[in-house]
Length: 115
Image 1 (spheres, rainbow, N blue to C red):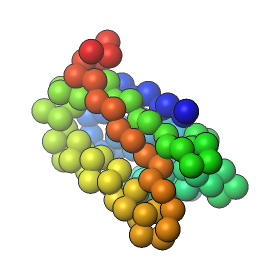
Image 2 (image 1 turned 90 degrees about the vertical axis):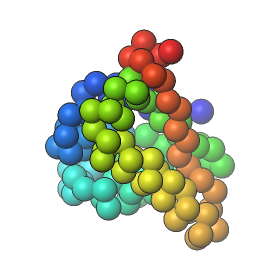
Image 3 (image 1 turned 60 degrees about the vertical axis):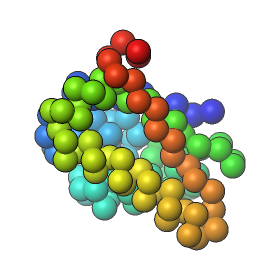
């Protein structure tokens, strides 16, 4: 099982959102730092040869994104929080529509300590 942990306390705006996720997933240098590019990169979680992420789902598996401090993140950055949820769902929808299985699961922790 692949798990990516993100402390959302480091996210304050779009720039920091993209910096945090680019670092956590190892997006390529040409990552466009917008939500279309975020979706494109994560759509390839199950395709290591694509070179879109450093993290990969095992065959038939998913990558779990553990988000810490979600309550504060949702209050501080509602647009980024909503985009994260919508775009994670879109990654899975896109894959399902093309005959593949979902690759991204979200786990929310209210605090930074994992509770």
